[in-house]
Image (cartoon, rainbow, N blue to C red):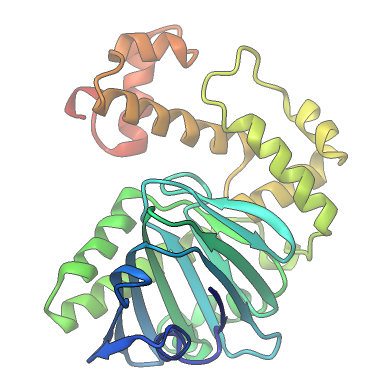
Length: 310
């Protein structure tokens, strides 16, 4: 089944119409022949809407979504699933992965995204759609620089504090508290964008450069490389000078290459500890720390708790 969603229009109504689904108040219930699950929506002032997708399909679903170049709306696409969500953004194949620097995908105007949802796979996705007036009303200092970003693929990481806010909204029955949590989430996200290069340094990245960046990122997603390439090596692999490479890598992924790799290492360590696959000391040496205490400090700085608390 093929669906086409315009970000500038009500998203839940478009899914309801195209899936020919049953709508119960602010939720769409999937028909049994399509799968199990639902899409729910919470609406707030300033055309701010929180969409929660939780489903397991019985048929393959191809979804194309686009934010028109003249759109007054912005969208955040957040992966809460335990598996990567594969997408094609403006012609480039990308992965949206929880906790990694690609956990949140930002849709400015003039962005087209396509994805395939395979059968018998559980997905959980959050969309946050808002009008540009929300930026002017709640975040005036950030409004112009955020909204002027167009055509550009931007990722940010989904940190644990941000995920907790989203989880609170999903399970809450208190709309005022949900609104506060959602604004808090957006504030954290916008602060991350502001921590990047100055807005005037944002540039429309050529598709071939995007492709090269993701090849480089694939190298950095290995948490335990025997020899981590230098910035000069990574820039050469991407076919760029060091300055341009560092600038657009941070623009796309939200962090410098070394910080990006650090996040990968910490998430790898967290999973290994939770599944009791390895000890903290084993992980310290595997991840290149000469002293296990340095690994413990790095882990606590990243997650806010020590490895022993996992």
